[in-house]
Length: 233
Image (cartoon, rainbow, N blue to C red; front, side, top):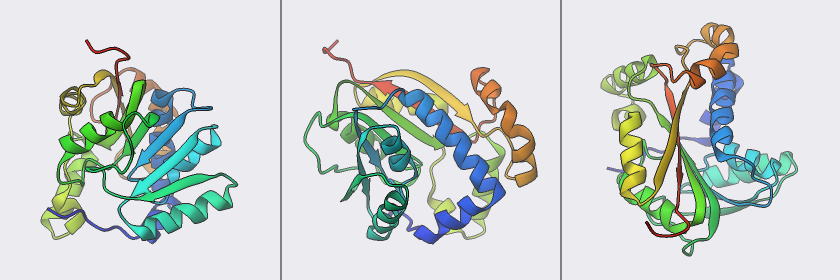
């Protein structure tokens, strides 16, 4: 299975919509709550796309490296980082074969990456390999049990190649991926409880943090925090 190619312009168009803007903000908040303080940390953003999470990490004081398979995405990330006055090191490569030495990073972030890579377990294993002992991996993925997942599956059945190939995840499956890579899965948080509607997003965004804390069902986005033990167990 090959990874679907999404044009950088698609991200910009999505972010410009009410639904896209609110959804991205909600997901970013959950990811960085799990990531914790980043000032002075070495952060790798795997599958950076046009750089949203890499830029946010750099703004929080991290030394950020961003990796993507597509040069178009790296070019878009470079332009966005420059426009925000932050520095991000950009690297082309695959999640399943990270071009970095062991223990190179304190935090590894990968958002909506495993849903598209051919070998998710290998990709998480690579993230664990380049993570320093005591560091953490944050995986943000598309939840299996949500209105969004149902709508995307229908779009895939109707011919949308991106969603025909996408893998949706449960909390248990994400934990299993982390454990399979030798990581300790600390927590899984859900977010995006509203349906894919700009009106619904505006109405429900204020209660998203509460629903996340309550581990409410139906989250369209799941974020897992996993740790690499400092000493082998």
